[in-house]
Length: 160
Image 1 (cartoon, rainbow, N blue to C red):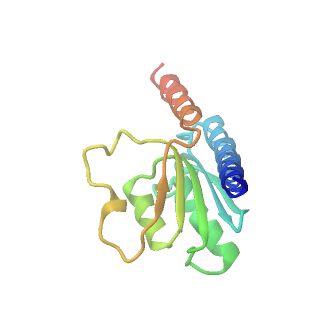
Image 2 (image 1 turned 90 degrees about the horizontal axis):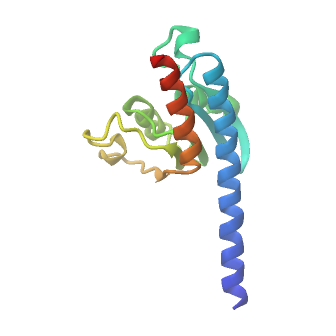
């Protein structure tokens, strides 16, 4: 019985950490929203320490690759002084696009947690399903409702 309780406690603690890191990603997404960028935020951790925290900056930088995930990978690589992020975990508020998914695979990120699912690429094969020597552990819908609400508000504002 004690072992079962320990397992449940560890799961609850882990879920709390995941939600806490996703909340940090949501803070970044809100920064993007305030700058009239598509509100996507990303955090990367190494041993449960935040080493990168970014948001979309395409409009601000006039750089099509300035997605939150790409910027976070650059920041984490600079911090760790390596492109190999195989012991890192990424938290991002929106399911990554094909460009970002490919960069996540290439950088060897261990685990990806995302908030809202992207409906934009539903009919295409997921980049994460393609053959690769590196497999990313993926879990979606982490604080998904909060992520969806922020994106919905942004696009509603843009249409009006």
